[in-house]
Image 1 (cartoon, rainbow, N blue to C red):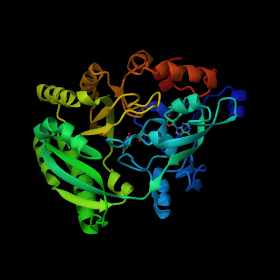
Image 2 (image 1 turned 90 degrees about the horizontal axis):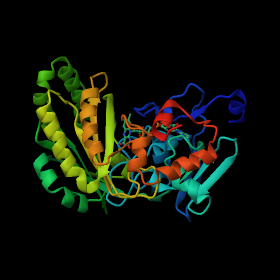
Image 3 (image 1 turned 90 degrees about the vertical axis):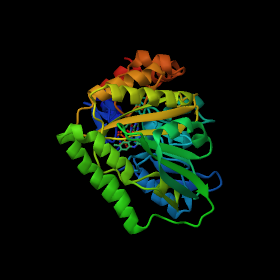
Image 4 (image 1 turned 180 degrees about the vertical axis):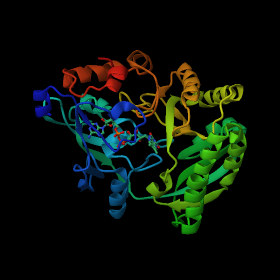
Length: 401
Ligand SMILES: Cc1cc2nc3c(=O)[nH]c(=O)nc-3n(C[C@H](O)[C@H](O)[C@H](O)COP(=O)(O)OP(=O)(O)OC[C@H]3O[C@@H](n4cnc5c(N)ncnc54)[C@H](O)[C@@H]3O)c2cc1C
């Protein structure tokens, strides 16, 4: 940090580059995470684990499982680093349990002047309130302390369900399950739902062959082929979507958390995801469906819907508000602007907050309106990084100069 300051260069610490926005881009000094990995320590009395910031989530999950421990909730994949995932507010779905950043109990960061700052609820609480989802704007995170719990079992129930029924029963589906999510296939009235709930066991993992067939062959291999056909002949997309939505049949399995929450995602895609107030989600989805039906768009990728409870992190997409996430995707290389622009118009009409690592067009003025604590974050940034050592084009847009 000091050398960069002497040379007048900006600094950007990055994770694995899984963000779809240019949030991790820099033309200054790039700090790569590969040599900042590993478990620093486990505190069984406090039930916390402290990890180096560049540790990939998959390594953390495996290490915790070996110790009989687990995070409480996580997103769809575990390729990202702990610092990269938390810095953009990466989340899964949960009724009570929130994003990965909300599971942080302490942070260590190197600030713009090269000093090491630690924070928690008790120590530098103003920094803690913002830096758990810091967008890389407040310092280089070097270690993160997460709350953990004894490893537990989750039973997943995956089941196709008509969209109209999911929309009509959304409040019950959410209230009756610890983790509810669903995928809706545009141009069809079909969804695949997933309900994960804690279970007393026994462990009943997906069988090896069934796992390969359903998670690799159908969800990745056949799905990829469907994307190619849909791209070559867009008129076939609705028919393919109909087949895709019926390809996966109901199944149930019981396993440790990361094996239930995460799965391989081999089909490359681009994504926009917005958090809207939870009570608005069914209305937003109806508007999204009407928009797609009215338009010439042919969308071959499902829309993913998840939830999170309100949390206390300044720039969390769920900051102070029970939220539902709606994510739209297109296959990598396929045109996405028309679809995302129309979807974004609907999301922003409901005071939506975009995922910091996924495509959006919002700027600081918009964020000042949808985040009541936006000024708290930018004031802290002014204090910790007055010279904008961590500046890049993305931060200039979303946080202002
Ligand atoms: C296939 C796929 C699936 C995904 N699934 C989900 C999902 O289920 N839920 C969800 O919410 N998101 C999901 N995402 C988005 C992804 O989790 C985020 O974009 C995440 O930030 C990527 O982590 P990364 O390690 O690649 O970080 P990067 O993209 O490399 O960096 C992200 C940000 O973190 C900052 N950063 C990284 N390390 C540090 C550090 N040490 N100190 C300070 N700042 C740092 C960077 O500066 C940058 O601002 C998915 C993305 C992909 C490609």
